[in-house]
Image 1 (cartoon, rainbow, N blue to C red):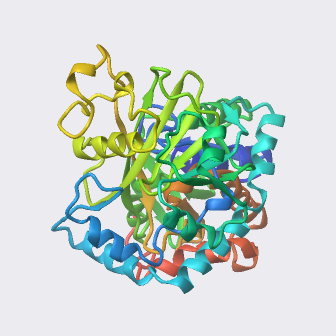
Image 2: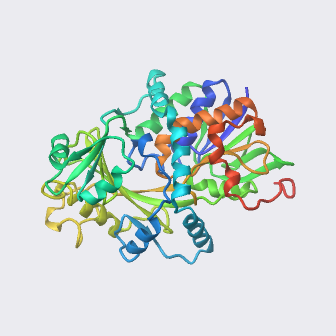
Image 3: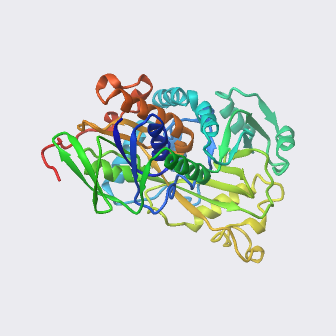
Length: 440
């Protein structure tokens, strides 16, 4: 049995803690917030999409971003920032916007995803309680050109506009075609986080909330404790799995990782005006619609370089306006979120008494668009699991398998599974402070 301290109670940290505890390890989870899944782990579309898991940087991303630079409601927005680290991150990301790196990343993610649905089913078999849907994912296109572009690598056959509307009558005549991925799934991400936390407790995992990590105690090249909530939390192995905050934790550990926030927006429409049978991706608009119990979740946009937690009404209106361009009769007034009743969004006279509240989620991004999973360079007993961008819910079970395999086998180079090698932190590290030079 190994004593493992996990920093972060998001879906990645929870999945790893659950898996480690199942193999008999003693696990303690420390979390800066007051509950599990408080950030991007709950505020996302909730999709489980192995077939569509690809890196964020890709061919055409640069030209598309330049076209959208002057639109503050566009699906991708890079906010100007004087922060040198922001500029360095963007320049590094630019290097990966090519076919070769994109294909390499897609293949690595496909390998990592090979057991995703099997592992998700195992959660239910083991009694993890969460909202889980197996209805498939429908991609909707307003132009045949966009559909042809997608169909280059699409394995399912394309659908006509009428066939798409047969599957989803809420979509309007402006939808010209689509593609159905019947094996894809979706969950209520907040319920998954809550279910995993409860299941972790059942396996003896200890949680310490409202406990931000402020320092790292070291003995030579090994970490002996994390200072969290003003107390030393000792362990034999430490996992940094705190989403965007992993960047700061890795800096405390002496090896800063280039993880930056990519902010997504969303809201839940409880009006019942948009009945859906499948999760739907409005392809050109890059907006995700997720039918959940009693509501439909709208999520979209990628915003780089802005403060976490703030809601930009322009971005919100962009989601509403884009969704309305696909829905029969436009976007229903009764479901518009708070902040969207402005020019270019929903008409003010249609505002409900209590409109849905919008939220944001800070997705942990890396320059090459791949997660960071494996040993932290320069540290004998520190692992990292972060940088999953929009794929945290999809990749959480598989990431937990990799981390558990490394802990079970020891943390030496010989303990690295082949599937983890494309995601190792050292690929992104140019320098690090040698452990032992300074300890706390």
